[in-house]
Image 1 (cartoon, rainbow, N blue to C red):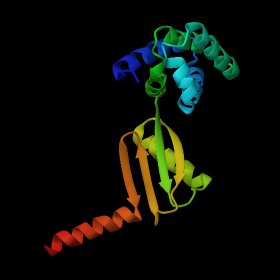
Image 2: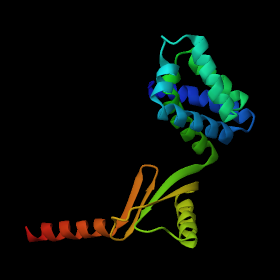
Image 3: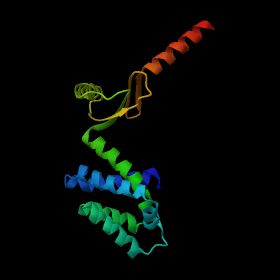
Image 4: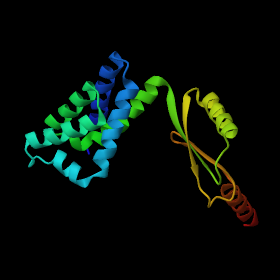
Amino acid sequence: MIPGALARRYARALLELAAEKGLEDKILGELGSFAEIFHGSDDLRQTLTSIMVPVQVRRKVLDEILRRLMASDLTKKFLLLLDAKNRMVGVEDIHRSYKSLVDEKLGRVDAEVITPSPLGMAESAALKQKLEKVTGKKVMLQQTVDESMIGGIITRVGNLVLDGSVKSFLEEARQSLMSRSQ
């Protein structure tokens, strides 16, 4: 882990280079794939972050992963720079910062919808359209099914949570009745 400001600085520099070539989303995908592999393997993390592992060994491991990912030259150079600066420990933070910057630049926002059963295509499209109208951004909608919900819908857009679940409604009604009886 590296400080947030440093992760954002690396992400901003990477975005500037990617934007020059119109590769913002491509680099986002490649960096995300690498970060996922990095996160999923304790051995890989230990190898790529330990100063006890010789540079040649780290470079060989990194080259092989990047070859398998068919990573672009920009992603390769960036990750090799992180390795050379002993900043590989921050790759996940840098990825999150980069994603945030790319989404901001391209006018996108992530939204999660939690429902007790899957939404139909028409419902999903209508909800996405409404969220795009409200946010003024392109919504990247992710649906999650929570069968423990009684009914309703919970929507998260960025840091905003709109809880329209039946459970929430019942809790508010209970609180209201409790406050009136006192």
